[in-house]
Amino acid sequence: MRLRGSRFHGAKFKRQVPVDRYVVDFCCHAARLVVEIDGVQHEWQSPYDDDRTRTLESAGFHVLRFTNEEVRHDLEGVLRKLAEELRLPFG
Image (cartoon, rainbow, N blue to C red; front, side, top):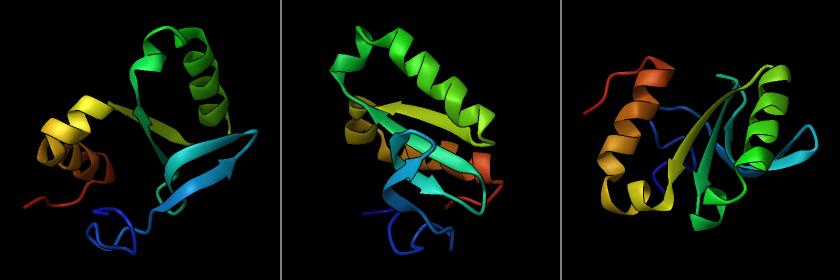
């Protein structure tokens, strides 16, 4: 909810967006930024995630990955990292 509807410092994120051959969790097209939230299944599908990241980066996007645990237990830290990536003030 904190990213939807341009709520995050005016940056417009869309959820479940097709990029290349993948559907990404969140995408800010203006900043060419993809945010992926990874569950526990990503621990054993690292080669798939690595390929996915390479594909997205070759399409001109920067990919930030966070775990479900980070989002649940340190949302402010996740948002701070996101603000840093977007070069936005946080607070």
